[in-house]
Image 1 (spheres, helix red, strand yellow):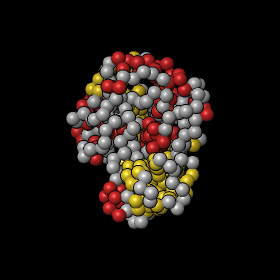
Image 2 (cartoon, rainbow, N blue to C red):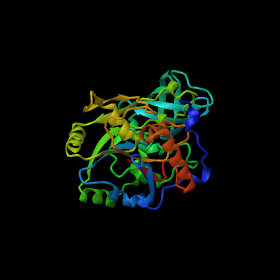
Image 3 (cartoon, rainbow, N blue to C red):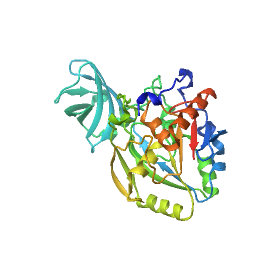
Image 4 (cartoon, helix red, strand yellow):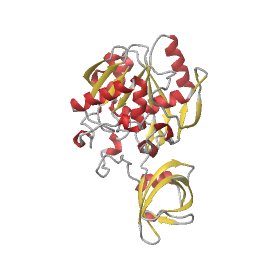
Length: 337
């Protein structure tokens, strides 16, 4: 399938630059594949579309302040995006500079922090810091807003570019479908008997990597670390046995579940996944997906197209644009059943 099959024209004013006043103020576009029907709703009405014994699987990864600014010994400006932590003083990072730093190069950061480039593998640099990485990030790091948010990070992003249930530090991009859930919504879901369980997938910067190949099968996916716990596995088994539905909150939760399937059974595990889901993929577990609206020609739109059908997905996006839904990380949501 060609990349161009996933292209659409998006008015720039529909790209949300800020979150709404309250998390659950967003809109919800509900689509049922069985009937082909859609509804325009408020996200606050999500519980009306869920049943007791349904299971929502959320990604509890926590966004780290992964964007850093520094300079080389020559004085040249450098921007870094930490991709993966490798212990207390080492990490992989993307480095943007006028000239790529070589192994042994020293980059000075604020407040006397500095790092040494150890090696480069593909488009990532292995770096060693002169201290504790976690301490450094929280001292001088910036929230890594995605490239389509064309402003500097602000104090409000510390809270709003983070789910309320985020626990395990490691993501450089938020699992954005979860940004719509607030404490009141969580209480309403639980009061209705809807179960909640958590996967952990640390979202990498590769989630924004464009598909450059005309044939999408030539695209190489980025790798991300995920965990499916025994508690999550047991919750899924219990839900299926009771006739409930498993609904992934976000593409990262869905990719975690699908990556952990083996011979038709969900396995508790911690490992890397580079799963690429595109039309023709046979889903093994999930009955529903809550997700935001994604970029044209992106792997995430390809995943949505696999889930509800390519023609259906592109028509749904046409409707979303016509109805002025807000797109991307701080935008509105869809419920796909």
